[in-house]
Amino acid sequence: MNIQHSTFSTQHSGSLPVMEHFYTLQGEGFHQGKAAYFIRLGGCDVGCVWCDVKDSWDAAKHPLLSIEDLLSDIERTPAKLIVITGGEPLLHNLDTLTATLKLKGYQVNIETSGAHSLSGIWDWICLSPKKFKAPLPEILPVADELKIVVFNNTDFAWAEQYAALVSANCKLYLQPEWDKSAVVTPAIIEYIKQNPQWELSLQLHKYINVP
Image (cartoon, rainbow, N blue to C red; front, side, top):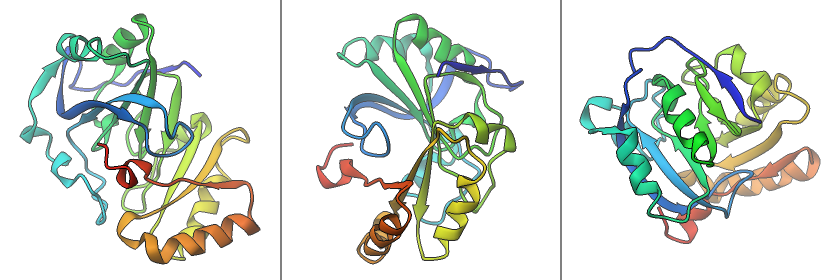
């Protein structure tokens, strides 16, 4: 897609708070199963009660890493796809990071709740809105993928509210919340059978025990 947006942010330097970064397989959504280098940024103010990376919430707990050092580590792998995630990555201005990665020829994707202004240059935007803090209207029409985490049966109607706001070309995914998966996955399967515009996303990485 190669969409570029800019925001005014205090994070314009060449360093970002990084909780972890690693080369693995993408476990979720449209790009599931593809080799990808993940950069998990620190900082989140969305506060999902079922979040499995709550250690990412406080950006101050994580070291500031330079874009040059991140790029050096990425280049030690055969990665072609970079995924920026969090926490909530759009708490930070991502223009410089993504521009650097794009100049090196990488495909650059983001996973975001959409609760903050969009910055960066993106090939793929995965929007995963949360009830705890609504996404900004500006991100809805540019999302390539809408991924709804299903915690209980009320989430289906909530998912449809956002499906009506994204573009006609946006891929639609329902994903069971991991700790409730035994309960909600059968309900998701039945819902998708009745509403085939949706697809199932599973956290594949948790089944195959990779990061």
